[in-house]
Structure formats: C-alpha cells, structure tokens
Length: 223
Image (cartoon, rainbow, N blue to C red; front, side, top):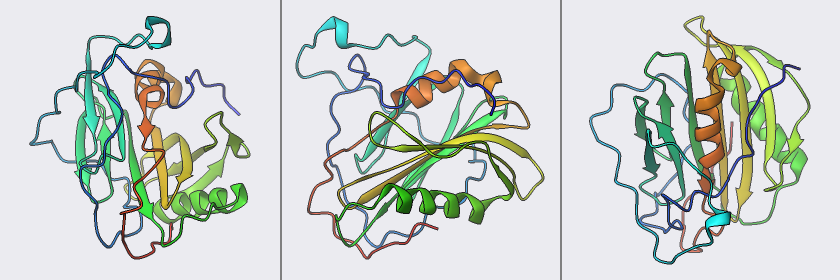
C-alpha cells in the first residue's frame, strides 16, 4: 500500500465555518450518482459564515488564504476547496475537480428509513459496492481503516468509463438516518501529487452529525 500524507478527516475549521444548520430536506433520495467530471460551475461559492461565538485559538486549524468554502444546500455537509477548483451541486451531494483536471472527487449522502446503526461490515460492504458499480478494474489497496470519528476509510485504484485511471481513497459514515460517502482521487496522477489539496479538502470535510428527525424520505439503498 502506498503511503499517503493525508490529514485526518473532519479537522475543526472554526475560522471559516460555523456549525452546520439544516436549510432544507430533499425528498425521495436516490442512490449516489457516478463521479463524473462536473461542468464548469455557473454559481459562485457562498461566502464563509462568521462565527457566532469566539473559540479558543488553540482549537482552530490554520488554513491558507487561497480557499473557497462550500456548504451543501441541505446543510448536511461542508468543506473547503482550493481556489480554481470547479464544483457542481448534485441531488444529494456535489462533485469537484481541480483546475488542471488531475484531482477530483465527490460527496453523496443517502437517507434511510431507519436510524438504526449499521455495522462496520455493512457500511464497508455498501462502500465497496458503490465503488464497484461506478468503476472497473477496482483494486483495493488495504482493508477498511476505522477513523477516530467512527467513519471507515478505503484506499483503492480503478478505471473510469473513459479509460482514466484513479488513485483514490473513500470514507463512509452514518449519522442517524443519513449515510455519507466521500471520494477523492488522483486522475491519471498519483494521489500523492495533490497532497496539499487533499489536506485542505479531506481535512476540512465535516458532516451534520445530528441530522434532524424531520428528514422524511423513502429508503435508499447505497449501490
């Protein structure tokens, strides 16, 4: 397994993000969409919200100035992207890609009909099926790796339908009725070539850990 310098997912970004709030709920969720290159965005990133309360400086994670903040319309997740990255909101998630087309990924969520926690084995199975349904020649670089935030991480390589090679990692986690899936990958490039970008994107990705009970949708099966 190749070594990757990636910071832990979910580092605090109090300097730019306030706690997530639910803005809307999407009805009738579907399975996560394929991770295809997003079109050139037509909407600018929203401005970063200001903190309502001051926080201890020691708890803040320094971030470079050249970033853009993305918050999902539903309020279920947020992250920072380097300037120049293209993004596209999609139903139940978003996709992103670097300006030079060498790095990209996606976030998708599914709403279940129950908040009963799934086992780590069940979550890993869903993640593997999700990846294998979208890509060919999938090679798993390691067993799943439990993270401090109770998500699971998988490292893998695969090919897209257009013949591009992906060097990737993914996370899956469940909070209440919501399952979140996060993919990040080098595209015809080693993942390590984009460690600085990965540290920003993966390290600032946060999810709503307590989705509201008002989320009401048909159960969706993660592919």
